[in-house]
Amino acid sequence: MTWIGLLLVGFAVTDLVFSVRPMRHVPEAVGATSAVLLGLLAGLTDAHDLVALLGIAAVTIGWGQAVTRGFASDREWRPLALFGAALSLAVALSPYAGSADGLVSRWLEVTPIAVLADLNGDQALLLAGVMLAQLSTGNVLVRLVLAATGTVDPARGSGRHVPTYRLKGGRLLGPLERVFIVGLGLAGELTAASVVVAAKGLLRWPELQAARDEHAGGPGIHQVTEYFLVGSFVSWTLALGSLVLLGG
Image 1: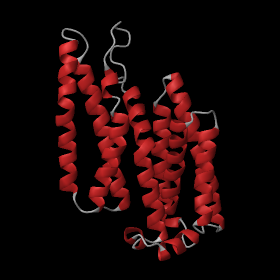
Image 2 (image 1 turned 30 degrees about the horizontal axis):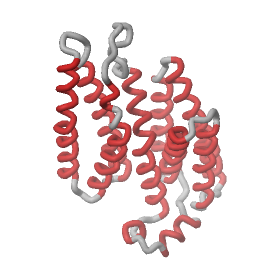
Image 3 (image 1 turned 135 degrees about the vertical axis):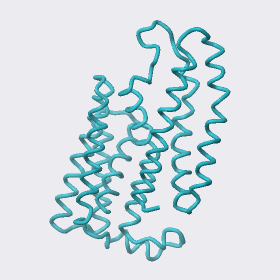
Image 4 (image 1 turned 120 degrees about the vertical axis):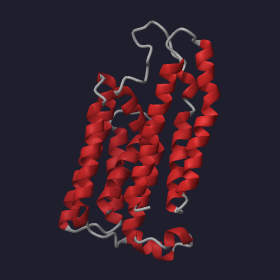
């Protein structure tokens, strides 16, 4: 469980830093360092845990470079494959991970935040990784899937421009809705989460209608609808998959 959380922290910090300051090599270095330091603060100092921390750092650096090169070379499937393989391996090896009994665990024992006080160190690390991943990493995964399936720019090669700029609010709404869905799921209110999903569709319907009106007879409504649906389902899948990891 601790290794999964640290892997997600490494990926998430990398993507968050890149979204704020897109500098070459810096985001993945910060992400890898953050994961290793957090692991050491959690007391993961046994030999096998140290080896795992080095592996997480290496994969985090590889993630940052794979995402950058994937978008630049139209090979978005590579970072997607790396993400899936790394997460699957972390899940498979999770029974061998050490427990977070260090400073993180001791902080949880004295924190005045009731929700966190009920968690042990392992659960806290996983929760931190999952929640951070809902922010920037979720958007990166959505963009990768959209690009890999050819739905980012449906008018590419047709000489027409699809008004996908209207949907850029999803870069903010996506993280908010994922965090909201995960929070509701942890609170045992998955039914309420479905209301969020339905509300998003209703709120975006005028946008899709506007795309149809502005681009009647050309690539407009169908492509924008596909863009919206693919992006939304990938985003929701990430949130629900996170709940599975958390056991919510």
